[in-house]
Length: 551
Image 1 (cartoon, rainbow, N blue to C red):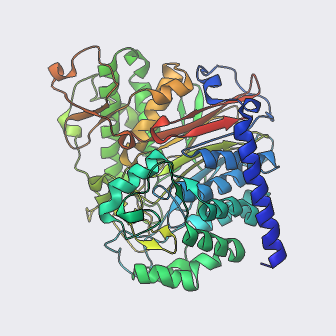
Image 2: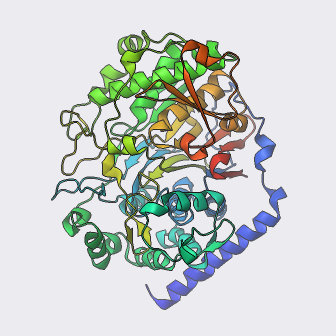
Image 3: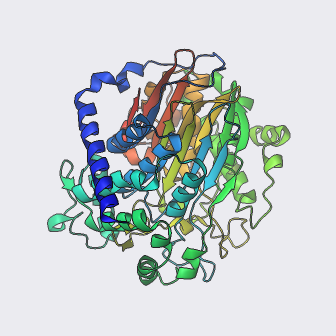
């Protein structure tokens, strides 16, 4: 890239930063989070093809701001999603980044002639070697962003990467979440003076500069995916993980597919197909319908145990059937058939525990309890909605650090069972709980939602949709409701401290463990298009200091 072009990009990015600061000071110009906290879904079926409003929700205030600015300045939802993805890799280096991958669900605006599509740029096992002990897979993030940009982008890629370079170079204010993640992971992290000044995790409120990452991002900005997948950077990745060679990196391919479809309430539900977690979510919602989950409203024990048992049943069914469809025949239609859902639901009785549905955790990721990923949603002025989950698998992935970024350990999501459809094989994608979701009516996207949280992602998203759609709870308030999770391999109900039972669950033989570990219960991000009033309403999870904005 020539010096003049680089200079122009710097000027553009500085302009973006100035606008961000002005928008923070002039917050009254935008709809604040609490102005829509009491919003509940209405039954109006959208018919309009254009809304005029737009919004972004993410785990990071600066990522949300950048996404809004991209749309402010004429970009579409995919442009904003690319910029947000890159900035999240800077603001949340523990949750996602160029050393990992992700899943993006795009629902084009009605009237565009385009159909909803899934981009799977998750990590794969090396073609040329067995799965490394580190769990590092071939990163798909950079090629994923490049592919969606080729198909949907309207703003130059260089401009979309520029904000992430600026924040890496000039610094970000460390959040409490980032400080805590650095503290919890210190025992397995390399020596990184900028993240551990004087040997201690950088404190919340301090400024974290990531110069190596800025240089690497600038190389991608100037050279495109080739700068990442070949040359010096690929050699550096191979030096860090010997089983990840240049041939594996250069041969990586992004996969596109149609989303799976289901129904919940009056909505069509779109979710990613195997090997992502969409099938578990759709089964969970179908079983919740079958069991009339709305009858558990105001019955906290029955609600927690019913949703927990549903998740157990779906998990066990997934172990039997789900792997990468390129390597195994996944009976999706059978798994989603009315007969199968009825059969799966038949053994679930309110708050009763059924031991036959317990399952051993079958992957290292589950055994290590990767509380992973980051999720965000974007809606643009034309009504295009993008729901995205990006990940490194475990927080900070493998902990292997290459030129400013962390390599994933996504391959630890492969089964340890040699007979599993999810067993490791060269070139294969492991199962993942990542589940970016969009709910629509009349062909128009209405709700975009998803979560972080490892093996708790699908039950967390399901709980959120039950509260919003079946219990008619306000959107932001429902995100803030205390969560529960019934362990898969033992009869323990994990409960956030503020969860209130009306009956004593221990009298029913339920072992309850209260927890204040906010990261354990994930982080939900969601946007809702209110077609009746031409507004965007949102929800952002305070468990990771998330933020949402609309205009």
